[in-house]
Length: 168
Image (cartoon, rainbow, N blue to C red; front, top):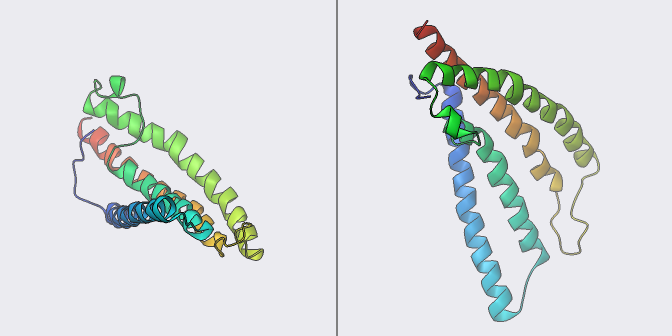
């Protein structure tokens, strides 16, 4: 389905978060190159650097979820979807968001918030010597990512509804 209207404030927020995720991805690539170079050329390494790579990977994935939906780049059975009319695509998007994205996001926000709260109360940090502290900061992105996904889902539903309504 083609986007038939300008960006909403939610779309702009998702775009900004996606740009932040892309920046983090560039930092992650540089960090991996540095870590691999130091490890293989100088036989030196750091648990903290390796954990930072994992944390940055988490950030990239979590910040990219809503952006992927906005850009219509998420996983779907395109062999069928691409053959549908624009109106049928809009119905698929509307119902898919209503029945799958929003309930799943609500579940992850609910469960994830408890998960983050427990991590924060324990001031969770790495169990590895030399690891990173404040693991709860990365974990806090989980419910936030799904709040952004739910918001982007609502924006996509609005867009789909306009397509459905315009062709009625």
